Image: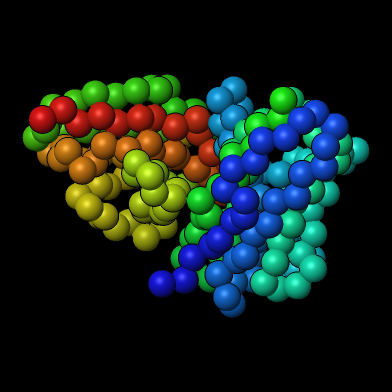
Length: 114
Length: 110
């Protein structure tokens, strides 16, 4: 069945390195979300896209984070340079604008910045 | 500001006992409320939404605007209900970003 995929599933890197996370939304879904989960803050929105256009990225630290959708089948979240406080699980979710309003989540990328 | 509060981090109940997972929200308009669940080694998935007023896996949730609550209930807990449960709010329809509570881990003891 159709699922959101995320790569990599785990990433360990050193402070200052660039990190790129990728998400493949469910085919046909026109809305993509990036959430970050930490013990302290829980699940928080970083950015979201509708029909590949960014609608809200107010949750992202703009100086180091960037999110893009190069095409309808790929969303990317990049951190440059990474910092230890970026360690978290990053979830991508996709959905349709319809009566259900359901968001389908990927398995997440667990990022550890040393 | 939008906020969702789940006061219990952990809730342990015996199999067959009733379950109530509490959720309170803060929002000035008419929100849409959801419960998402994450079973062990599985993805976060939608359990139910207030607008559909349905029962899923024996769970129900009623939106109480006066108390700004959306508690999740089940009359008889089963072991397979053990999971993390997240209450979430959206300020408007049209599949917009969710504001999540911090979650409650439900443990059903045999």
